[in-house]
Length: 283
Image 1: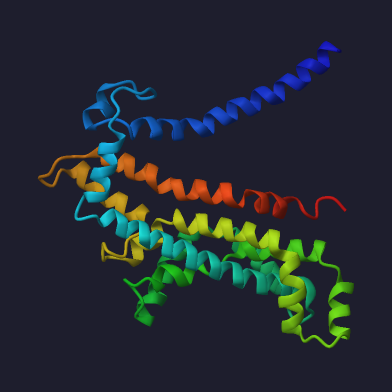
Image 2: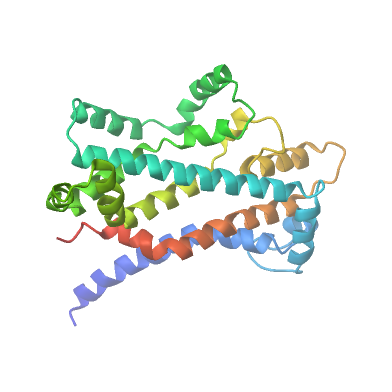
């Protein structure tokens, strides 16, 4: 074998290995830290196990403040599921319309959509707060769910996917058979869009699960907090003292539990997710 070709094959593998270590290192630290008590977090080696306190930490997490962590976990699941399903439904309707329907202003509206993708979500939080305040929805679950239903990237992804993978002839055949536009969409388009729908659903759920700034601004009732905001309140309490014990090990363990549903979602939906990203790449 040519030595030059061997070196050419070695470099990409080395880069991929370094990138894998870079991305997995924080998770490894979190996993190790969740097994330590409060003193062990600061006195033992940060990247290796010492005494095993994971079970005790988990008990403390779920019993702290009368089990409010379970309330935050339930809230995060509610926000993620409702926002994810709603954003996927809106993206499917809009993506299909942009790809297969002809209406005035379609090109300009799609160009505006592409521009919205470039706008950071945090830049829209304060205007959204003012709108929700006028509607009387601040400090309610709808203040978190309704803004999350708009997913410009999901619309763009489904528009591209539908345009590339759904032949116009299939839609015309359904119309000739007497199907209305709603029937064409539900019976013909949606089954063909399923891989991309799962991709958008997964991305939307992850974004909603990890959402921090929006619920931080919208919510003041700690029983409506998602995990991100709830763990932040524990961290602030531990940092400032507030007359109680600073249980950083509880915060770290709570963060570990918070990412378990995301890992499970990726493992369960990965075959649809990968299919949604690659279908249309090969004709």
